[in-house]
Length: 494
Ligand code: GLU
Image (tube, helix red, strand yellow):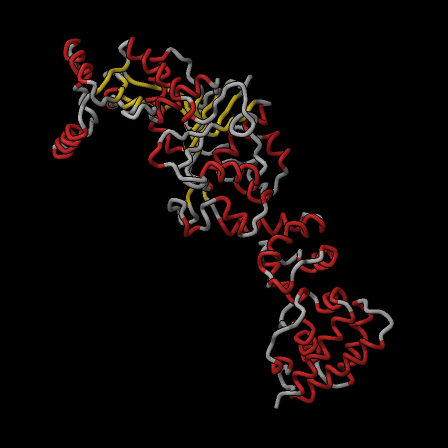
C-alpha cells in the first residue's frame, strides 16, 4: 500500500549535477517536481550539485537553466533568482558540510580514514578474488585513540567516513514504489568528505535537503539504492528525513535504456530539431504519469490541477519519439498563425540561403496557413516554403515537360497561363483555378500535365502546398515573371 504523503508546505528540488548536458530523464525529473510543487502551492527549488570537481563540464549549468527556461519550468529559488536558503550551488557551501561532518566526528558517527589509495586497491582486489563485496573494511574505524592521534600528527591526507550501523535494517515507504528495506550489514562506511575537502554526493544531498527544508525528494530511480545511506545519515545528524519518491526509468520503445538511437537525448537538441516546448512538456508529462487511461493532449492547468504521485507508475516508462513527433504536429495546428509564424521564422533564418533573407513577416503570415496542416517539425517549413523567398528558381527546364508532353506542349501550356493570368481581373485562387482549368481543356492537356508544368515554373518543385493558393500568395507579378523565365529557359533547350 502506498503511503499518503504530507502535502502542507511542499518544498521540492531539482538537483542537477553539471557533469553533462541535460537529457530527457533530467528534465522529466525537473518537470514532475515542478508539477508537484505547483499542484500543492509549494516551492520548486533548483540546486546545482557541483561538488564533483573532476567531472564538471563547462556550460552544463547554463544548459540546464536554458532548458528549464525554454520549457517554462520556472523555479522559485536557485541560481539567478536566489532565495532564503542559498547559496544554491553546493560548491559555495563547503564550510556548511565541513561543520556538520565535524559534528559527526565529535559524536563518533563518522571517523577519519587515513588508508592510502594502494591499500584500498588491495582490499578491492582481495574482495574480488574472494567474490565478496563489502566495500571498505573499516580498518580506520577500529583505530585506538593513540593510533588516531599519531595519524593526525602525521598530517597526511585523509577522508571522513560515515560509521554506518553494522546490523538491523533501514526501511522506508517510497511514495511510488511502496515499502523498501535494506539490511544494514550490506552498507559500507561510505565517504562523507573527500581528501580535497569536498563533500561526496551523499553528504551534500542530505545536508542540503535538510537545511533547505525539502519536504519530498523526487528523483530518478537510479538513486533508490542510495536512499538507505541518506536515511541513516539524516538519522545520525538528528534530522527528520524528507519523503522519497523514485521516478520510473525511461526506456525506448524497444525496451532498451533510452539512448541516442531512440532520438536525441539532450533536451536542447529537441528545440533545434523544431519541437515546440508545449508539445515536449505535454509528452514528458506522460512519461511515467497519466491523467487517466486515454487523454493525450492536456493543458498545463489540467495537469497542474490533477498531478499527483498516485498516478506515477512504478514500471519503466516508454519514450516514443514517433508519438512525440505526432504530438508536435497536433500542437503546431493549435497555434495561432501569428504564433506559428514567429516560431518558424528562426528556422527559416537558419535554413534559407542568405539571398532569400530577410524574411518579411507579413509575407510569411500569408504562407503559414498553407503549411500548418502539413508540418510536424518546424524546420520542415524551410523545404516547404523556400521557393516563396527565392529570387531566382534553379531547376532543370526539362522538368517542365510532364509525362506524355513535349517541349511544344509545355511551352503552349505556359503561354496559355501567361495569357490567362495577365488578363485576369483578380489573382484570387478560385477564379484563377477555373480559368486555368478551361485553358488546359482547350489545349487538350490533363490537369495533371498542365498544372504540373505550371507548378514547376512557379515554384521549381513537383510537390507544393495547394498550387492556386500558393500562387495567390506569390502574387501575379512574381508568378508571371517566373513563367516568363521558364519559357525562356525551356525555349533555349534543344
Ligand atoms: N545530483 C543528482 C543528479 O544529478 C541528484 C540526485 C538526487 O536528486 O538526489 O541526478
